[in-house]
Amino acid sequence: MRVYYDRDADVNLIKGKKVAIIGYGSQGHAHALNLRDSGVKEVAVALRAGSATAKKAEGEGLKVMTVAEAAKWADVLMMLTPDELQADIYYADLHDNMKPGAALLFAHGLNIHFNLIEPRKDIDVLMV
Image 1 (cartoon, one colour):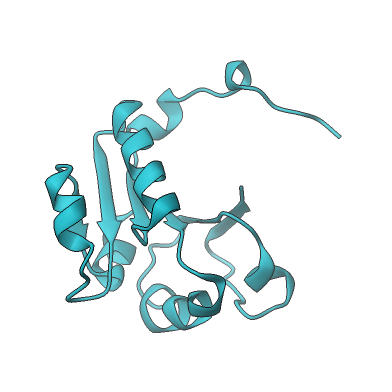
Image 2: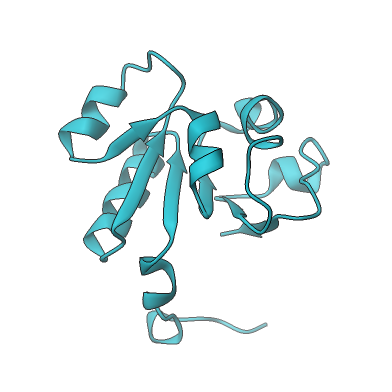
């Protein structure tokens, strides 16, 4: 097994990407602010229409859009919603809207491992 450290990563690779964080709970909030503070210029938070957390994200100066809008816009999408919601979100908003070659990241791989989400072949899937 190879272990990677901060020195192994080139943060410049993501600075030019459009990154959408799906969900704005404890993980989504931390990921979005960390990306912004690390120099990523285009960070958005993807939320369902009428989400109560939209004002919180906007208060941090983050762009807020629906999940479907974010899927069309982003190069990289990080799924940070509860596991039990992810398959519905993927099939309703991401599957038909993500750009070919986009990357979809998960904080853990339950939905991928158990085939609850079967991603399109033309996107990259990463589990962090």
